Length: 114
Image 1: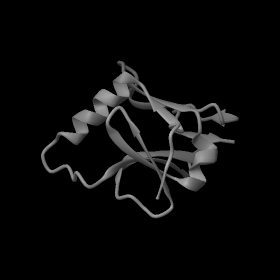
Image 2: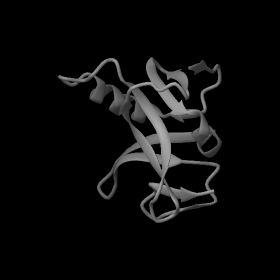
Image 3: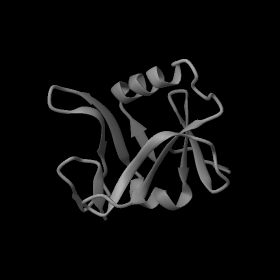
Image 4: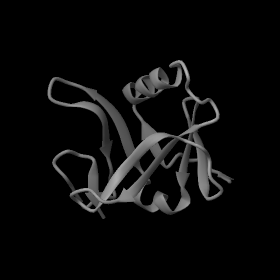
């Protein structure tokens, strides 16, 4: 695994708070890291991944405010510079992704194209 000094993505204070709430719940597997990535699919071509997972050999590892994170090295070109926020409004509740690499995004904000 490769450690990097500049984080490829940033988390807002709201996102950090919500992720920490998940990490302190009973039964949380402390051997897992926050995985940030993409997968094919969604209405715009690619969908964001955000969840807890085991580290893999082809991961970049980084830390954001004490949260250990991992990203597949191949996903960095799609996600570098992305900001992840937490929204808690009446019409929208959940993580929001602001990706400078996306040429188009879908209306729900969870998929994109480059």
